Image (cartoon, rainbow, N blue to C red):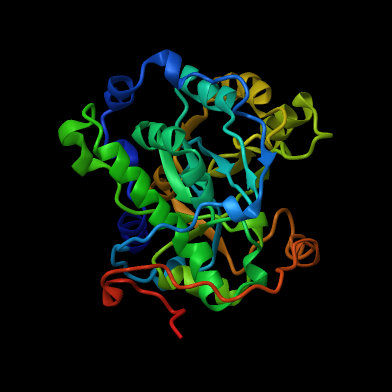
Length: 339
């Protein structure tokens, strides 16, 4: 099938490339477990934010036309009950977001495969946790922008940095993991690039979609939102959203950066119930490979236009144009943003 071939080319599945024992070889269980105080985000001077690291980005091929647009869910063959749980780990400028250890602990305790959409800045702020996530064969890492900026207000180099910056951060994390003695020969099997992208705030525009496709990434959204980022949402409400809205081929949105306020408790209840209904948890790439992606032309939460409100809430400030991402061999990097 042509579509599936494109999916496999664009988004490698970490589970097929890494031995689950890698995680245990590199970290004891006590180190992997949630630690006190790391879940809560906190503010800091934006001047101390990490810079996008210099990186020789890998060459890519544009997304095939059949896969352009925004993936909301996957249509599966009759009888298959797969669901992809996705967890956003984003971090805005002037803050250090959290690491929700209880969420990850819950996934591991229940043998759940999932996709983590990590921001580039988040990875640089949490290098040890990012390495653990990359080493975990049950988890897939996706791109969630550099600093969770609304791309609807970005152009030129700023848009390029929001889209390509996380790949540079990912390469730093991957290199650090590969240098650990516990990794040994397994380093060559670690994924080398991020093929899946989730737009910050679930908001996009045609120019951003074109830029993403030109850089060889699939836009992944969701058809089930847990609502876990709302402080008013209850554990029961999140559980009910999962049990009432998940259907075969669903992509679920939740958070693991300290802004999923009751996510861990809700997942601990909902995961066994969904398994009892016959559902199997898979990564987004595995879900895509199992059926036909349902693609729409634009981004939204529940209905077209409902994420446009972020245009005013997070209007970009007037800032000098940043320098482009450092790269040794520009021809090897497909980027439509050069001046």
